[in-house]
Amino acid sequence: MMILASLPPKDEFLSTMWYLVETYSSFFIRGVVITLLLSVVGTAGGFILSLFLTVLRTQEIDQRRDRLGSRIIKRIGRGFAKTYITVFRGTPMIVQAMIFYYGISPLRLSWWTPLVAGLTVVTLNTTAYIAEVIRSGINGIDKGQMEAARSLGFSRRDAMFLIVFPQAIKHSLPSIANEFIVNLKDTAVLSVIGVFDLFRATSSATSSNFRIVEGFFIAAIIYLILTYITGKVVQKLDVLLEKKEVKANA
Amino acid sequence: MKRVFVVLMLAVSLVVLAACGSDEQFDLENETEFVVGLEAAYAPFNWSTPTENDFTYPLHAQNGVYVDGYDVVIAQQIADELGLTLVVKAIEWDGLILALLAGEIDMIIAGMSPTAERAETVAFSDEYFRSEQVMVVATDGDYADATSLADFNGARVVAQLGTLQDALIAQLTGATRLEPLDTYGMLATAVSTNAADAFIAELPVAQGMVASNSNLTIIQFTEGNGFVVSDEDVAVAVALRQEDINLLEAVNGVLASISIEQRNAIMQAALNRQPNA
Image 1 (spheres, one colour):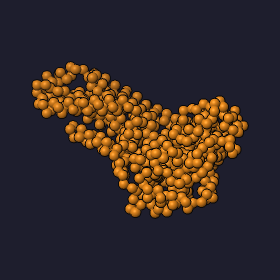
Image 2 (image 1 turned 60 degrees about the vertical axis):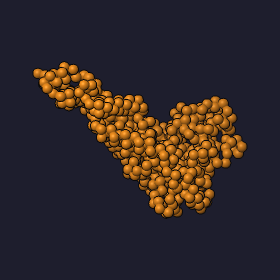
Image 3 (image 1 turned 180 degrees about the vertical axis):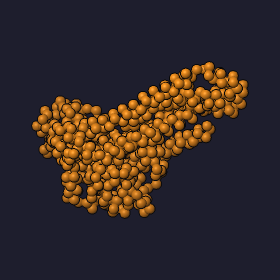
Image 4 (image 1 turned 30 degrees about the vertical axis):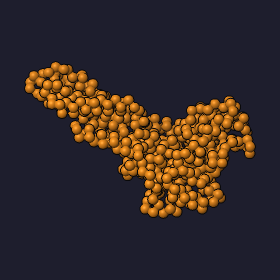
């Protein structure tokens, strides 16, 4: 292996890249780990929270049977879910990061680090997107299924939880996995609050030598590898789900 | 469901509550930690490195990432004299004052000029370094032989967002001011790739860049031919919250004990630790 002790001259693109990889390997590794952590936690956390949001949002008010109290609670729940989705999908994640990180910092909570703030923001943000994905999944389920369940004596809630939701979630899985790929790339904006993700790791690796193009070329290759691999996994997942479907229908 | 809603409402009200900070002074007697913020991307004042040495300090909450540079050495001296444990946080340039006001950090030490505009929101110490403003251009470019401000007629000039240097572009008659960029690394890249013709920098920053990028060169102006700057603009100072009067006095005391010769030696040593090519 070629060992480069010192920074190569300016026009040697490849050897500069090699120098950066070698000298700052710990930065790049750390950056990849943090980017993966943000994407995994953001997508998994977002998925779980989005289920709550979906439940809140799909409540139906029965004017005859529901008492006033439960009607109000349902209405507030639906309003909250709708507002939440509108706000988080309607504002850029970089703006949310600034507001959350610096909004909560004055409380001087020792655990409120940029990473914790970043994890919070990516989770809350992904929640809104996955909630939309699941909602369209629910819309895709034939209305006849609900009607059939109700005529067989299922309550609306049981029909929702036992019949509609599981199918909607299953159909949504590829789109949810897509959110993971989106997160791999979009969490780069969290470097604005000091999260040491791959983007900031690259900035840091070039902070005393200023070889930005070479540094971000390395970052691009790493991002591409990460998204390519997860993209392949999503494809496999797609095929797998389809196969099961065919079997179930047969 | 209701509980989830209540928890979320609580989170929202916390955010609102956070907007009203406390007015208490920094407690020099009882505080143990001294949290300073810097960019970690403004060599030789401050930069990031994966290798530890006698001058580096670990970044807060980021294992394996260290900061080095003039600011780090000075911050360490201040913390030592005050008997406090130094904590260093890396924050983007345009978030530094925000972080200070939010209580996220207690001091900015980031090669910041104590301009009148910034002094409206933060308190500045006495200067801890003084230099001059120079231009950085491409060695083989049209402006490599410039000697005066007038020579930059027609040049595309860029600066870092929210800096004194950005305001100085107005003094270059006939030059085009490009949209400011986020870091000095981007400025060096802009000139290297011909996206801009020149940028303005403090002399030590320019020296560090030229040392690692031979395609860049410094244009230093002779007496009377350079930028017209007020006295505070060529100096850099640390910034504190305006209510922390005790801390300001203590910091000024420490800075006064570091002579100009010592400062220049610390800066030269920081420049020598930057990579050369």
